[in-house]
Image (cartoon, rainbow, N blue to C red):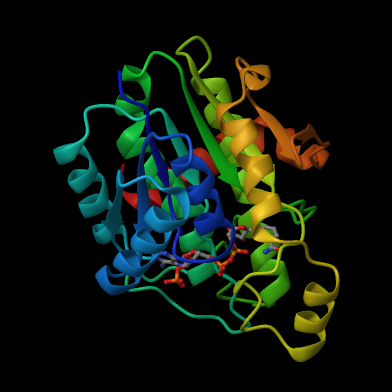
Length: 272
Ligand SMILES: NC(=O)c1ccc[n+]([C@@H]2O[C@H](COP(=O)([O-])OP(=O)(O)OC[C@H]3O[C@@H](n4cnc5c(N)ncnc54)[C@H](OP(=O)(O)O)[C@@H]3O)[C@@H](O)[C@H]2O)c1
């Protein structure tokens, strides 16, 4: 069976570098992109860099639930299975922005989007025999405020980012529990500090710090692809990796009650 890999947010940074690495294996790679123009440009670059023509786009705005549903439908219309899903797309904004659905943008893009897209594609992942889901997260000790998940009462940009990345971990570990015995592994990944567009909206101090301590997207991508495809990661699930090595998540991320609570709330918010 042909290998099919889907990477969201593959128009820049870590996602594009990851798509190139995946395409170098000769598999069918599908790249998520916000719009057709950006998607086609990235697709052509990935094809040229990898020498693999089997790179397709999946267009949609991950901050919109309706758009995510259309993306899942478009994927299903073309592909009957999925071997690897990398939920990579992410955003940082220094101000509180509301999505069309009325959610805070970082919570919507960094957590609700992977939650909904993954759930809508789960049966295709299960059909593959063995499959892997990687959620690109970041270390975080931010505990979720379930009374104010949309930061309506109080907004702090770094706190909202931290909460969204904690949510990625909670989602990954809960999904890993739910998928035990199905052949689908789920892990969270910290890509390390990487030069990309993610902090473009941050203040100059944060931008300087992140540029000083950041590595290349290519190096981060190689480690991600090892976890996505490497035999040594077969059957590894519910873990947190950075640079291919297991790292410790904050204790809160492993709290089963919080994992289940976030799952239930997320289901309601996305209308599953
Ligand atoms: N860079 C780091 O140091 C670092 C550290 C820890 C974790 N991460 C995580 O790594 C992931 C990749 O980020 P990056 O650093 O490579 O940043 P990036 O260069 O800004 O890439 C983010 C990608 O996500 C896409 N995206 C954002 N919002 C979207 C939306 N509403 N719909 C569709 N696509 C959307 C972007 O598309 P557009 O180009 O259209 O905006 C872009 O392709 C993120 O989840 C980030 O939080 C990064």
